[in-house]
Amino acid sequence: MNTLNVQSTDATVTVEFAGRQILHHAPDAPLLEIGDGTPSYRMSHGNFTITPGLRSRTPLRTCRVGSTDDAAARLELAPDDTSPPVIAITLSVDGNRVVATIETLSE
Image (cartoon, rainbow, N blue to C red):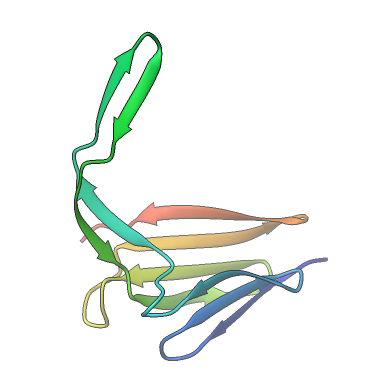
């Protein structure tokens, strides 16, 4: 049976599954960024042109390991060390794959 292996230091988090690295987080290479904007799209004869319209982008530089065992792990991401987490990622083993559930945390 494949298991999750979560390794963390003060600044980095690495998740391995079946002997392969599947996620890595470091402050200078954050796992996730969040953004704000107003996307737009145009359609002409069934062809779409999509413009992201990104106004701001915030890297989530802090990753805390909430809980972990061989079959599941919860990672909580925040913009910095002093901010509360804004996103939680729950990883769970389902046979030979890992399912990631992303949750927005209320402030």
